[in-house]
Amino acid sequence: EIFRRVDSLQLHAPFDQKERDLAEKRSKCHDTGRKEEKLATRLRQFLNVLVGVSVGLAAVAVRVGCQMLGNWRQKVLLSLLAGRDGWNLQFGEVLLIAMAMTGGFAMLATVAVVLVPASTGSGIPGVLAFLNGCDLRAALRGQVLLAKMFG
Image (cartoon, rainbow, N blue to C red; front, side, top):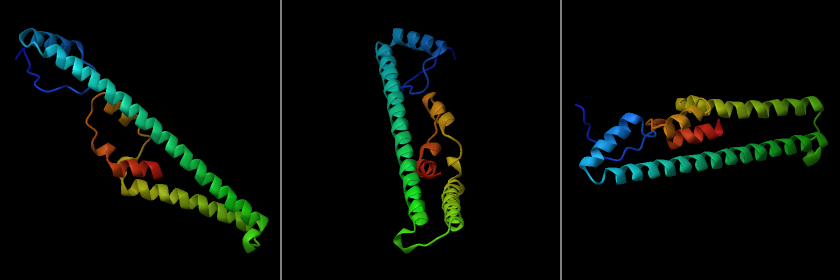
């Protein structure tokens, strides 16, 4: 069939030439064709900006969280080295505690990835695929985002 009916808004990647030609032919038959195309384009642009802002905010939250965690770890280790709070530990013991803390954080990240396998990877290809119109509902669930944040 030469003509293809498009009854709903197309919210995927920008229109290619074939889709533009079909939309133009349809708009000649239906007066609302151009309005739908403009609305779909504006909606896609808004969603792209919304995704970009939310990814940026998530990156800032992860960075601040990592800094807070690192500062807490440093404060605890320096406190142990100084012998405060009644702890009288040698350097080797504090070093073992530091390694145990690092291992604990690594174990937390491993458990997050094992429990939610979809959270592996950086997520950049997934965001690009989403912006290009792929349906990635499974990759954008709350569980996956939490596992990525802790992993």
